[in-house]
Image (cartoon, rainbow, N blue to C red; front, top):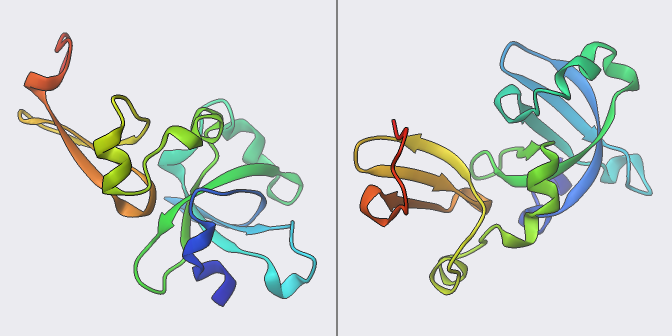
Amino acid sequence: MKISQDKSNIGKVFTFRIVESSDSYYLCKTLDAEKKSKNIIAVLPKALINKYFTHALSTLEDCLFEGLVLQLQEEGGLPVISCQQDLIHLKEQIPKSNDDLSKASSFIGLVSSVDRKGVTLRFFDGLKKLVLVKDLETSDNFA
């Protein structure tokens, strides 16, 4: 379990298999480690599953997929992963620190919330940034 809580895994991609399902998430385990005790156990929220991937999850035991470690749930918690291929391919553009945010003119993140002020984006390790509506190039169809 300790290997699952290693912050150095954030931003890395592993091969996972689903071991258990619930209404809102899947519990997954890596298959990459040399020893079984070194495999990572992670949570895959159903909201972070690509809609084209959902049909493949009907046979859980046979389903292998790549997952990107986004963050730990909380101090000492399990990692949260995403299997969205766009995020995996663009992982180098996802900021890991406030320094990365201040240096970049553009970056990749998950939408955490939307309100009248703007869009809150979430990055690796729980890092967040509010993008104000006035900073957006266009606000057409903005909720």
